[in-house]
Length: 227
Length: 227
DNA sequence: GCAAAAGTGTTGGCCTTACACCCATGT
DNA sequence: ACATGGGTGTAAGGCCAACACTTTTGC
Image (tube, rainbow over all chains, first blue to last red; front, side, top):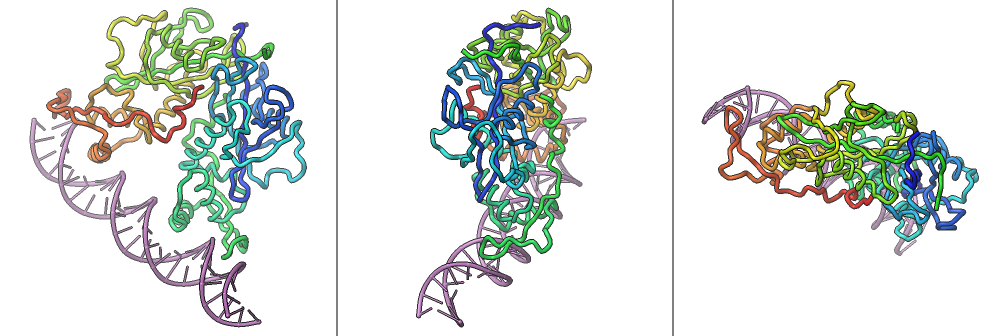
């Protein structure tokens, strides 16, 4: 067995996003112990001896917040010495996406008090370097949204073209012409109109759609990675 | 100080690429010890207690191959239990790029015997899961080549449009029309013709260019990450 | 109450641009 | 055989305008 005395400790953290009221939210859990006791942080855990990284991330999410079954992907590994006051902790950060209608409506069943906050909220709320992790996850989300169907994993099952476009604008921070947007997204043939289903939240009722295309992108060798 | 008995060991590996004779090459080092003694593997090392991840990757490259000063970026963290026969070793894989004319011409000054091999060489040459790491690095390279000036970091200082196009075709595995390619790449205004410099390797002499644009892409928050 | 105004979703058209495809020419 | 240049068509998307449907506002 290999040994490496004094070596870095390995952890995982998860930034879970969803969307509600045209706002992108990230899930935080309140820390019950020092350091940063009482502060808000991403769910995270130390990696167990024979535990795959993704499994550790899912376990952290389930244990601390009660949420499971989300889409989850590795993001980046943060390893600056000094990012954790307890010592050298290297964290394999992940990001995750969940549809608001997939979340149970009741009380959270995790160990920790949890809270959804606006993902770009600028305050000094987050413990450790978790602000940096969230920012990088947002950047990755914006990048992948441009060329993969990733955003359909945070939208509810049925949505209007306006919902989809506003989410796009939120994530990529660009304005899109509603006309061109509809043309482009409908020409892909991946949206099925829900017959008779009309959204009445706005002035003029909008048609509701459902995404019927693939969620995995074919070209990505990424999916096969068993990290 | 935090403790985690029996926990994963943290390592780094580096896939260094360059280009020579219109072929994309990756650098391998021969393993001096078991496991995989005598086999070829990516340069790698265990992360020291207070060493940043990128520093560990550069140290592995320098110590084992004598190469330094390359462009280097974090790739992905591989952590399947069982990927290393010695026990649980999680590796933060990096990829690196170097121009052939930046490499010293003389003998390598590293501790290990090194060898450049064609990056896509399919044989069962590589130790551990390093074939998977190289494949993923190639995929990342192809992806980033499409929207960043990444490929200029592997090309020599001066090159012809044919060199650039063939590298592009090699990496992205797509054929490009030479005419359209020249139009597109020259219209960006990032290539300066070297006055009087002509490449005579082919039938008709081709003009030599030098890249004068930015190497860092502005939008990438990635660069600021101090992992 | 009723009519006008305002806000938002939906559809269509024009126009520029990028690039794919093709051909020609020079070495 | 390959570098370079030119020429044409097509498809995507930016921009603009018109129209549809509802809520809000003002009298």
